[in-house]
Image 1 (cartoon, helix red, strand yellow):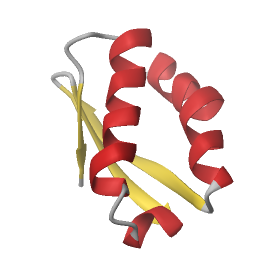
Image 2 (cartoon, rainbow, N blue to C red):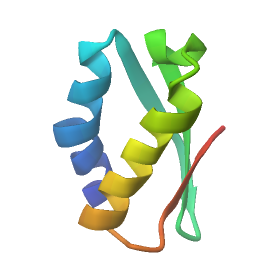
Image 3 (tube, rainbow, N blue to C red):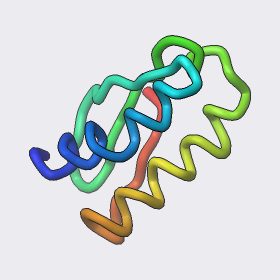
Image 4 (tube, one colour):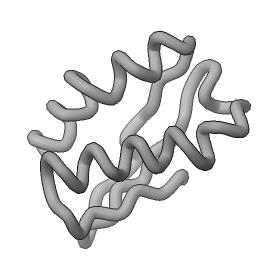
Length: 72
């Protein structure tokens, strides 16, 4: 979980903040990471598609190829 949080803080969160958004990690269990969008990402239609794919792909590449990211 520490590695996931580090990747989020170093790579994912800065990209979201550039567009006025952010995310909160809700839980991580059995390779499923549940997140909650905050700020501009909360109401953005791109959050459910492109941004979620970006987050999941980044974590698959840097942490675990079996990780799944879902919106809580």
